[in-house]
Amino acid sequence: MSSLEWGVLTHAAGSRDSATELADTVRLAVRAEELGFGSFWVAQHHLGAQQGHASSPLVVLAAVAARTERIGLGTAVVVGALEHPLRLVEDAATVDALSGGRLELGLGAGSDPGVAEAFGIRPQDRHARLDTVLDALAEADVVPAAGGLRDRLWLATSSEAGVRTAAERGTGLLSGRRSGPAGPDDARSADLLARFRAAGGRRVGLSRPLVPGACGEEVRDLLAPHIARSGRDPVAHLAAGNVYAGTEHEVATGLAADPCLPYATRLLCHVQPARLTFAELDPILRRVARLARGFRDGPDPREDHRRASTA
Image (cartoon, rainbow, N blue to C red):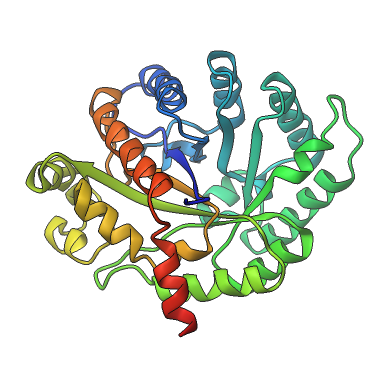
C-alpha cells in the first residue's frame, strides 16, 4: 500500500485572457477534488512570465476554497523574497481560515533577476529576504492566527544551503525538475532529497510532468506544439525523458523508476510545458487519477528502488 499522496499542480498558464484561464484553474481544482486528489497547488508567475496568470496565487486559492470542501490548497510557490513579511502572513492566514485549515504554503526565493528588480529588490538580497519571511511566519502574532499554518510550510529549493534551511526550520521541501537536451538531472536531486531526509526532514513534495494518454502518439502530438514554442525540439525533449508522456503504462513505468520518488511524500502532477485548456486537461487528469489508484492499491513501486539503493 503506497503512502504517497498525489496532488495537482497548475501554472494557470495559457494564451487566453486572464478571466478565462483563472476560471479554468478553479474548475480544475474542483475536478481534482472530485477525482480524489489530496491537494491542489498553484504556481506564481509575476508580470505574465511563461504566460502565467496567477500573479496572486493566494487570491486564486481563496476562490478555490469557496468551491471545494476537502482538498488541500497549496502554493508552489509564492516568491517570498518579493513579499512584505507581515502582509504575507496575514494573507496566508486569511486563506487558511477561509478554507478550514487547508492551506499548504510553499515559498521560494525566486530565480528571475528582472522580476526582483521590477519589485525594487536587489536579486542578491532575495535569500536574506526569504529568511525574514520565514522568521515572520514562525513568530508573527496576527489575526487570523497563523499557528496551524506553521506546520504546513514548504520551501522550494535545489541547493544544498536551501535543503539545510528546510531541515533546520522543519519545513517541507518542494523539489522540481530542471530539464535540458541531455535530460533531467534527477540523480543530483535525489542526493539532495536523501540528505534532507537524513537530516530529519519529513515532508517532500516532488513536482513532475505526467501526461498519460490513450495512445502514445496522441500525447506526443498534443505536447509537440507547446514544446516547440518554448524553443525546444519536441522529439529530443520527450526522448530525453523530461516529461513522463505516453500511454498510462509508459508513464507509470517511467515514474516508478524516478530516483527521487522513494523520498517523496507527495507527488505534484502537472503538464508543463504544455498550456492546455480545461477541456484538454480533464481526460488527462482522469488518467492520472487512475495511475494514483494503481500506486495506492498495489505494491509500492518505490520499495524496489529503496531495496536496490541499499543492496
